[in-house]
Length: 558
Image (tube, rainbow, N blue to C red):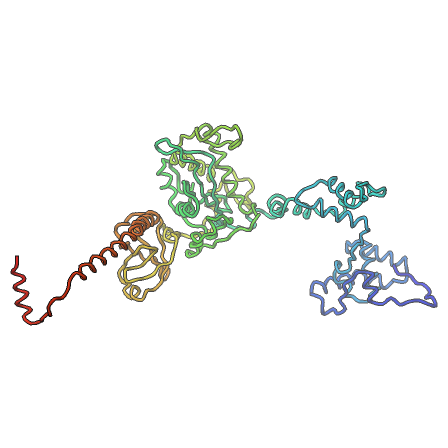
């Protein structure tokens, strides 16, 4: 703190450059250069030290004033003294702008610099060495002579460990040793209010797929494998909006799942002999916002076509598992519901793929139809009977079930009604086509429709939606309409795109295989024609008179 002294006869003034160097301050001399927040901070801190400036000469009064200000503003006394000394040294309020600007870096000793080097090189690495190992490697590199003998003045481990404790940052430690992805998934602080912090009402659909933990057979009893379950779960109410169960994954399973989302659930369950009321599963509309991870089945063009219906597609940020925890928990609950009762019938246990484990494929006995009945029962329990304990009911008398929460907020929900036929066309894959004189050419196939004469003649390009399982038709996309074109080549009617391409390739292979024979035949034909032509020699002069009579005589010859 400042005190009065008698100026000696000879003294040296401290220049501003030296003062800046000694204190490590980044000085801003012009208050106009400060941001609004920095200007506010500077004046707030000056207000705190201003009472002490009035009694700066009186040590006791100054000390009492600092104590008073410290209690009033809840600021420590050393901090107030630091502000006061800095202002007295520079006589400029700008020096109080930001505390970080005048924090001088603590100089490390030579030994501490070695400690820091050793921690960076041997401890904060993906090799995950222990502190003891890092300490030993440091001694080997820095505190041994040329013969590898430990020097007498080597630092003890407790000093090395103390330096580590003082300077260690847990975040940097985890990222350097485990990787940033591990930190984001398993260690990052989760300080939000869960999914409801981001999803304020119903209509935010979380999409995901999983391979179920059971082996199934076909109707003949032959092993088929493990089916794929794709679901859409409402993030707010946790209601399962729809599902698909089948052998195909990717965009196909997603399209089937969305068809189930908008389907009448009462009629759907009736197909499997299950009778429910409309309130049990009152979902027949698309969520207005769909949230997915970055799986390949969700980042393709097929899902993005839903934006034509007004749906917003959002890719969740990486390593944010808590944002899709609802759908992840859905899979856990559903599979834990049926697995205890289907053990010995193809269910995969925790020792799957371990050495000497049981071959669960040999236990398979359920067909996919049987298993879908089981899945439906589990989903109905999940929607109507599973108790949700942590839902913020806000004083409302709502039963703690997903379907009751959904029904309560259905009218305020963020959902979109759409017809099944329009959704089917929207989710079809699309490709580029071209109008030709032979019809609308899509790949190697041609299609026709009345009313497009000008397009056929001009050779316009177009975009069509096609059904991969049936090449009998395509839909021309024009002004948000889907215009149906029918196949011209009847040989491919009812075939899938893959089968049609296989037939075309087979025909091309046959044609290409005969090119050599065809070329050889042309050569042989030319040889024969030339041989005949060369054998004919003109002996007399040809006259062109009396051609009709000559033709009649030749015609009468037998």
